[in-house]
Length: 107
Length: 462
Image (cartoon, rainbow over all chains, first blue to last red; front, side, top):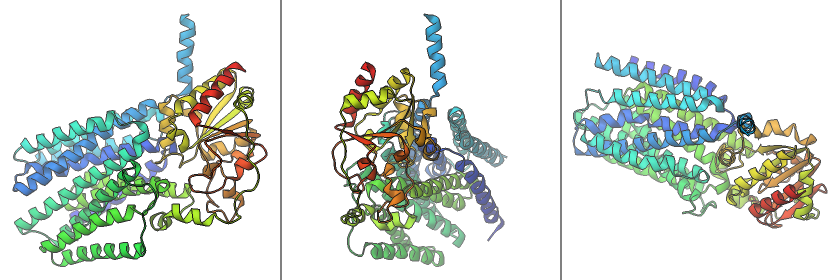
């Protein structure tokens, strides 16, 4: 095993530990947005597909790369949009009350 | 120099992704966090375009445009009730990207004559996990969208057959490591992984989909990790690890909430088994006591503390808005209304929260199972809407019940219960519900949406 691979295992382990810590703290309230968010973020596989699509390693590589770019980009665009749409729906009750109070004051 | 710049950009992107995940622990910060993540994504993509291996940009542009055009409706137009299949479809897209990149890199390595065994192991895992996630997710999508029947599809010797196929896949991976240039074996491995995906999900019933969708999330993440190893890219390893872990944590949480072990979900074909088990006299005894909408409305209007238990039936009836309106009316009279959310109330983790938030229920009224269970004893009225197994006390009291041991909402501890139900039949899993025949429970039969509207009118007039 060469040193690059070894470093990669370190990266994997540390990312795993930090990820576990962060994800365990996410309440069930936000589990659906979490799944949508990880979907969006996983679109970072674009870093691989962009290179494949643009490196002109023959028609097969270009076709496969273009398919990959399409899929990953759809996830990025769709994923971030839908996560934002969902998170915008989560509102606090006192926020509403404040709105109500302003409404009363205006009258 | 250019490479260093690209790597620094990836470092920034990875940092922002982690910040976004931290921010997701609170609804107040979550949205801003995800905007940072989107910025990180843009930085990562822009940096990649500087990569020296990229010579031409036409096909990148074509792919990006099609992807963006396809992604927009996936983000903006898909209704919240369709979230589970939407997410399953996204898993399929992400895994397909990983799989074709794996295949492409394999052929690149093949023609350049530089396929080392380490490289092939990573590519092999990428294609194997990616392939089964693609077809598995598409099967889950078809089931959730009801293109395929939601019930478990089984045949004799299924588990043995599946394991054999999976073994062939792993064997071809090992073969490839020894003999990296054998294209036939590589093809067999891809074909096998595509078959395994379908076979893995077919026997799993509709109610178990939350586990499966989470699990596929995890596989998609692992495929991304493998891609990272294959092309020496740290950000893919990091993101893949986050994705994989998040899927894994969620599927464990879902399994626990359904009282099932992981292997039981994957190999158990629950739906058919449970119906067979409940035929005997282990079910609940007693009569359901019906109540008129007028009486039910009065009771709710004068209650101090009300807890609504929404189940999947509420979402099926599209009655989230009516539930919120009823809650508003009770609160206007001075009552306190909370929604008790069981982890598997929807078709995917957290689904019910999103549906109710969409209907305008403030998120501090949406209470997780553990927190709300302490409050039931002092609750005047529990209103069960389209939920069944998740409030069945048999899970605590009857060791013969197939749902015995499942964590439930302790609605039975409340002072009184009103259950909205379409008819007198058993629930989704075919299990009789002891709560519905409890003397303090009154049944309001009829369509959930219509019942909620009537209840609202009664509360208003009370």
